[in-house]
Amino acid sequence: MSFDIDVRRRIGDRTIALQFRTGPGLIALVGPSGVGKTSLLNMVAGLLKPDAGHIAINGTTLFDSAAGIDVPVAQRRAGYVFQDMRLFPHLRVQANLLYGRPKSGSLAFSDVVRFLGIGHLLDRMPSTLSGGEAKRVAIGRALLSDPAFLLMDEPLSSLDPARQEEIMIEIGRLRDQFALPILYVTHSPAEAERLATQTIRLNV
Amino acid sequence: MTWLPTPEEWGVITLSLQVSLIAVAAMLPIAFGLAWLLARRRFPGLLLLETLVYLPLVVPPVVTGWLLLILFGANGPIGRWMLDWFGITLLFRWTGAALAAAIMAMPLMVRAMRLSIEAIDRRLEDAARTLGASHWRLFWTISLPLALPGILAGTMLGFARSIGEFGATITFVSDIPGETRTLPIAIYAALQVPGGEAMVSRFAIISVLLSLGALLLSELMARRFTYGRAVHVL
Image (cartoon, rainbow over all chains, first blue to last red; front, side, top):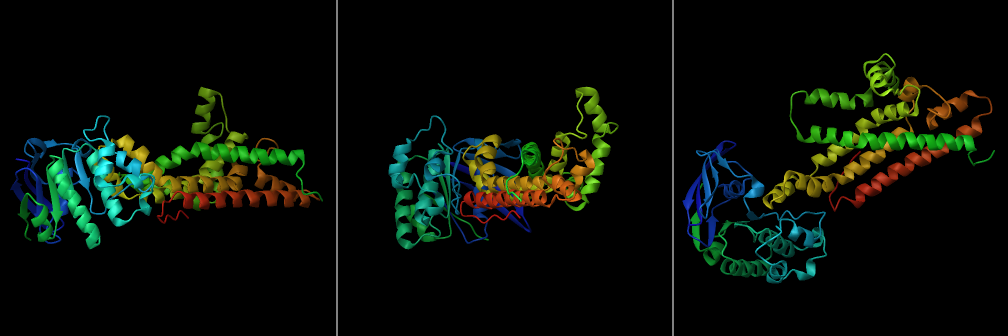
């Protein structure tokens, strides 16, 4: 079992209530905008606190309102690939990639850089990157932080079809090569069909 | 009329620079702390603190000087305490001129810094936290560098304001040649003396150049460090 999630959170005048348990691999969360997919990722990362419930990943409890457990964001080891990338604008690509890197990371820097094909970008500032390049750097930064799991929020959004195909291939390889649980948010059933080990449909 | 300042006039210029630089350097961490507090914290008394910080901007400078006199004078609560414990007084000293300049520069410094702290994209800070950054690491590596344009611009603005400070200074520390006679006070004194026009012109030109330089530098630095974002500090 990788993700064991049961959370409730009120946002404005609506309530997000989600409950699921998954096997290993890439878990796609599919549903229309506004159903609370990003809010769920934020709750798993610790950026948004659920009103009640629990979140456990690979047997490690990150949040449990009944037991009073709420692991701080910085200690959750989430590899979060944000929809809007959020590369640090004042740091070069290399510094962005190394930002979350612990002293003894399990992945070699050069391996990740080669895996994502971003070796030629290391000296660039984020503002000079194209959408596809920035997305790859964001994925690399998350991978290099030695994450216990990955959270990917619409990683193909704002990319043209050719880039989408490239990134999709990379995510597929990532799913197969690194044994990391991945929570993958998308509004596209086709994307989920192609990448997901298991798909969870969310409805309003 | 010669355009070069006399040795005595150079003394005025260096004193002015000394007073302004010390004032801004001492106020820098305080202003940043206040700006951070006003931008990021919500607490009872926030509005009061905000009002106090911006007060020197709207109160006549002479009144600010008079308040400093009451607080830091020989019989003032702070002045007496400083005299009793450390044997120092700011009254009629260049250090007092620096204090007056710092207080007058504070609102402009805090305002510029606060705007740039508020302009920091909080989502970037969230991203850094998911990458394992501690509070301090987050502050030093993300928040502070992103607030840098405002910090630099605020510092330069504060410096320009300090160079021009007159009302609070003359009220608090009076006009003592070589000790508290800064550029604006020297200009005023020279105007009172028959035949002092040449000195006034020289001082006026130097004042304008210094302030202009500080403003230009602050604008250039704000542009250099904004990484493509638009940050307006004025």
